[in-house]
Image 1 (cartoon, helix red, strand yellow):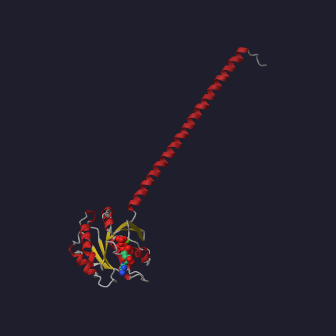
Image 2: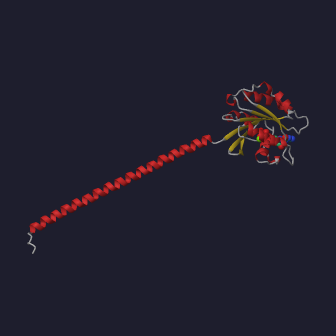
Image 3: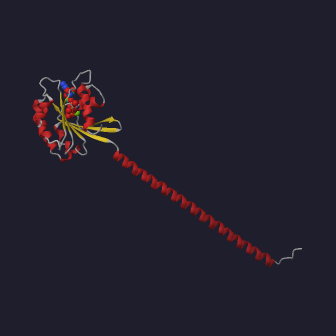
Length: 242
Ligand SMILES: Nc1nc2c(ncn2[C@@H]2O[C@H](COP(=O)(O)OP(=O)(O)OP(=O)(O)O)[C@@H](O)[C@H]2O)c(=O)[nH]1
Ligand SMILES: [Mg+2]
């Protein structure tokens, strides 16, 4: 038979029980606190690792972009020389020259060759736009200068503009493709005559590689003139996009 316990015994036991219960409870709370903190820390570390990985990946993407093969061609020439018409035929094959309007600012079109994108910037040639040509010189891989070979009246102005361009440091060693356009017009100068007029022979080959092509994109023509395919080939080779 169990000895009869005094009231104090029960109180003491109850106190001990409640004390050990509190300790156990505290231990459980403390333990869960540690576990939660550990989990939170682990989650934080995991998130940090993910974050730094995605930042690294971001940098990889940027470096890939920097290496991405892109070329930039700058197309200049006096107004009405035929820049927009030629490049519409080169990039989209369209023959509708009625759609061509004088370029008030600039046009950008793109040629793709393999994995390389060739961005073609045609800047308007009117007097009011020519003063902004200087804003487009940077990072040019190829300069195309279009001349209306049938417009003898404005030839000296074209010569003056070419001289100014050749004096621009940003174009040093940039290859130059001169298009003697409107070869279909009676009395148009030949590509050789245009080259002489622009004094292209005096340009040292160490400074610029120069090529001259005769082109024509007459209005109402039903076929693309072979000279346009020649231009396309020259663009790819001279811009380094081939
Ligand atoms: N006959 C003939 N006309 C051409 C030729 N190429 C262009 N044209 C015409 O010349 C005019 C001017 O052509 P655009 O292509 O607008 O000239 P642009 O050099 O772009 O002129 P801006 O944008 O004002 O600087 C248009 O009426 C064309 O149809 C060509 O080879 N022969
Ligand atoms: Mg134009």
